[in-house]
Image (cartoon, rainbow, N blue to C red; front, side):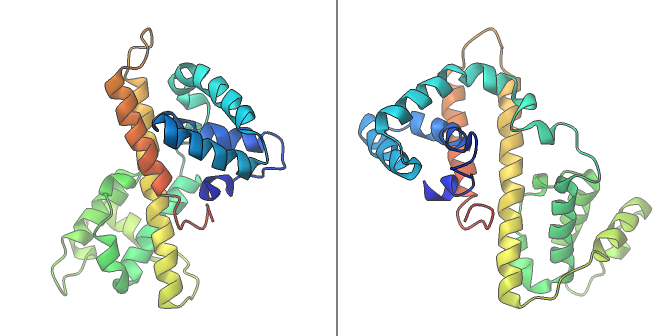
Length: 225
């Protein structure tokens, strides 16, 4: 609970409501005993009564279908039309630059899902890097378009840091990339459903699983500390 609530200004307008909305999908899937326990914990975090939190959760639940079906207009709006200046591209570029310029990150980098990258060129560069033989030059495997993109990534300005700080920074980047991938997949799932019918049990279960995975990406993330 503190991991999520710490992301919001609880004293600012709507801060507590955003915490409740973020956690609502998780709480909805818990059994009654666990749900009551976690609602109590959340109420304590928000300096509110359990009844107040319950009322807020019911309000979120009533908005569930409309909110998720209009997902492009709220929390996932920034993923609908990505432009080169967006933070999405900056995150991709910085992560790829770390991978290319810091060989000590390879063990962690090979676990990354290529679909985490927004641009096709970035996915291709990552996949070719992943399949490099020892002492093989990555740039020799790239066509002119990828070579130009690679040069741009390779020249990304890096702030000098220790190996430990770099590993921590890279782990944060990986979590944010994975979070974005899961959020986009979740949005696609919702938008592919028949808007005239309520969500099926299978869909609700899959969304619940995705919500839990998304929540996991906040653990240890400097954005959520």
